[in-house]
Image (cartoon, rainbow, N blue to C red; front, top):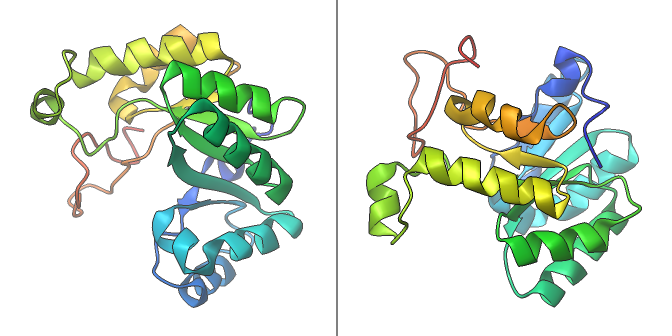
Length: 201
């Protein structure tokens, strides 16, 4: 699936429910009701009852970006994607390894699930890439993996805003380009290294 629905700023903004409990997430959703229609749920909340909460939100028409960054043998990835399709999620992240992406695309075929290829984590800089044994700098690897995501039939790419323009030139207008690591000027970056401000994004 491609992101034809992302037509307005409200549709394009995804708020991360990066909180420890479902109670905290429920509070955030109540406070943002009418302003936000799209939420991201990652490991922290997912493993604290967040998957059931995600189903509940999705059944009420709220879109959910499930940030699981799946990576395993092909069959295991495919089975996981099949179950996530049945949950009614809008987006799901897969690490951008070609065989895993192809398995995920086949498993999601015919559904509305938009599969996003995680290119390079925004917490990684060039030294981290060297330490991990990669022969590419972050920018080069992001572009290489974006090409692989396009050829695998993925619905979009996750990259830092620093690379978004170059990624868009590769994947064209019909794939989503999702940019985490957006931080207000002067705010704590946490473990994020390749970040930009909302104005820059």
